[in-house]
Image (cartoon, rainbow, N blue to C red):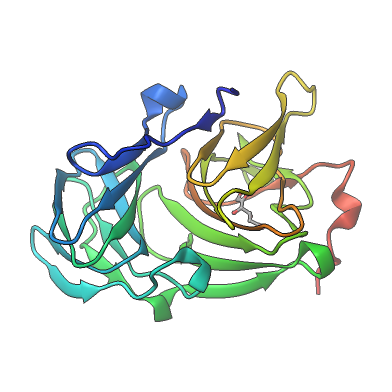
Length: 270
Ligand SMILES: O=C(O)C[C@@H](O)[C@H](O)C(=O)CO
């Protein structure tokens, strides 16, 4: 198994956690990522410490409380494949959160260093930027949950639906050099769901010199680490692919560089 794939636990821990990526486990500096599966009535309580957090209700409904705020009965979709934007909660560093599941809940906790103390806030579905990107067999649906136009210290969070037989994160691009204004350095995680769930996605992660050159078959519930390099994704015919991306780095901006070999595939800018 590739070191870039993180597999979930088959049984959740006592706190409901099925998957965890930390900077230490990934061998990088900024991005942390966890997935919890909570049963109705189960509560997850955490302090954010030095990190800011974006809690994404992937599926199910919950009450969410922070030090100063409470949101009751949030969440709408019961499967990511309903393809409606999710409810999310931004929690700054030095705060706490308590999530009580009202239904079965799949919760993603996206983490990165918090430097200021922005107020905690609810990100409602209406505030999520919905975008159709690409055309033909590269058309995919994007939900910009926490883009750089919205306040946060480090985190960028986006979810992508790739129809069966389509490609996304395509043409291949990378963001692994702190060389603004041309390119930003962002670590990235990809958390996958596949429908039907026996399917798989294919993701290639490679650098120009091919010292990193992996082609991964990724299953439902797995996470791919993208520490550097280009990282295109393909959804096989018959299998719809969902992923949630978390990105963070020294500067909170997404400036990517296309693989020059394939940049000709980029649609001309209008
Ligand atoms: O365009 C897409 O299909 C999604 C990607 O941009 C993805 O969010 C990513 O690779 C970000 O670097």
